[in-house]
Image (cartoon, rainbow over all chains, first blue to last red):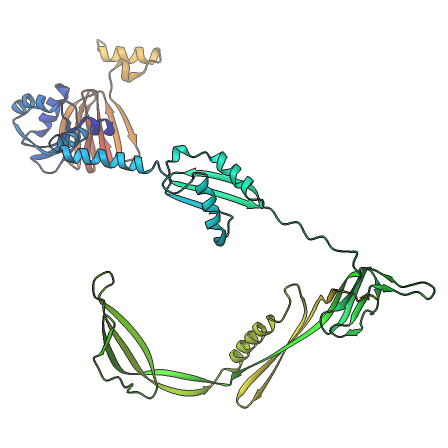
Length: 391
Length: 92
């Protein structure tokens, strides 16, 4: 009902008089629709009345001995009436709506999903050749054609999906995985150790085993031979294959100072200022740093920002004096930091597929520094297939 | 003692299970929580203040007591009162 009143338009009225109840009863008798009646004082009351019913109040007012005045006009009717004398405002609003509609009919953004940053330019060029570019009319886009052309023109693309949402064209591309390279099993080869290790287990797929489980091997030592030798007939050469798991040990040492430097501000500060105009630097204070130990903070203020003819900046370097003292560090915290550093250092040596079997830390203090050595035992693949020199 | 037309109507209403508000033209009240009251079959507003509204009905004067009372809608058939209603009094 309120929406209906708002659409048709209504006025808020102030009724003043002694017999306000009489006014209300007369309105009911005359079938004048008023609503939202609220009494503010003994002689004043506010109410709402429809625009068409308002002239009929004249009779009621006369009989009810009261006075009515309009306090506010509400509703779409008054809103449109306001525009009757503001034709350019109305024209501007219509033009704005038309402009928004027109601009929303174009593609303003193209998003490529599943394409690396380096390849984006190549794909955008392909789309441009297909007639798809930023600023094109969205009604002329054929999404199916875009998908088909991407699959046909790129061998690695196995699936493509183009979607237009508003002014944004999203194209998702899925690339297929490359087929694994075929292993050349004809060339005679043998398997050697890639690093010093103790053999944990060995699975021979082809070739002759030349090392046993638990045996210590060195880097480059043959593990699976590709040569079968016979006494009564010539040697036979094969492509040796197999998986060799070995235990490998890594260690790394890191050191941290056993004392920490504790710096606290004394409260004294000195500022050195520079004025930059164009490419010129003009010192405004003495350039010397007054304190023996201090920390520095640089603050730059743009006096005339970029884009104008001259750029001017004020740079202020604040020196805060500090008391510096060396105090013994908390040993537990220091050990934790040393362990973290040592582990980060040794981790760089470990292969990504290595399985960590054991990890130990050893601490000692030398020359005022805490030394932490980490020892890691891993289980990893140590076999490498290399070409065999045949006669 | 001669029966009045009202008593006859009441007896007929009871006898034939007819709704009393239709047969006797009695007022109907619909209270929603304590914030809204709809009164049908009223006979006019006697008094209206923010804390008290007195309405004439065939039964007598009904008083609605509360805070911030407003006449949300008024017509010859019904009156809708909104606000914080604390009491509704009928004549003794």
